[in-house]
Length: 229
Ligand SMILES: [Zn+2]
Image 1 (cartoon, rainbow, N blue to C red):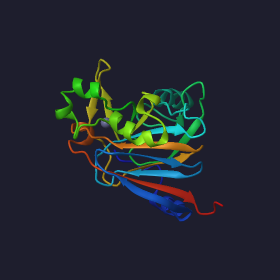
Image 2: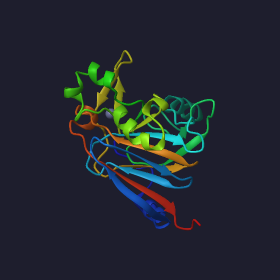
Image 3: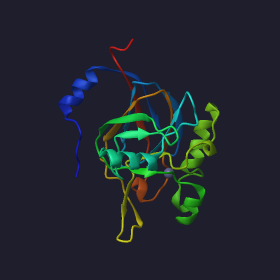
């Protein structure tokens, strides 16, 4: 099923009140880290089709405070505002437990809230040369992107990745079944920042079903409210 949480008319009205602050492409198998200020909206679009974006969110004021995917699934479930596949509130890990960002648009509502592909993950999935395009996993790419901001991948929460558009089901015994993304070309998800954050974004390099057997680029737009001053 393909459902949009807001209508096209509503979206157009909302867009009239927003200014495009910046837009860029994160090319296939690459990464970028960038600041997102409180109140700004980050739109991530699968403009080339079925592709997963791995996102990490880190509080700029205290970089130890980071988004936790597993903890967010728990808290969203308890509040009735999310599931294993989609959440509304992006919580930071304990002991902080603040809402860092809020999902305000979600075209596919089918994501994975977990971690990222790593060297060990690739090894157990068939080997780097078979599973990953290029010689870097998402963890390696996060490390590259975060270094200019004084962080390495080892400084980030290993369970702190929002795997946008990644689709995973469970078999009868609870085992994970990796699937091609259910999103369509042009589908987007939007996050409103509730605090000043550093975003690290990777276009996942996996060449298996996770990216529909063909890694692609993803489009990023940062939107601000036009009446901001
Ligand atoms: Zn990956």
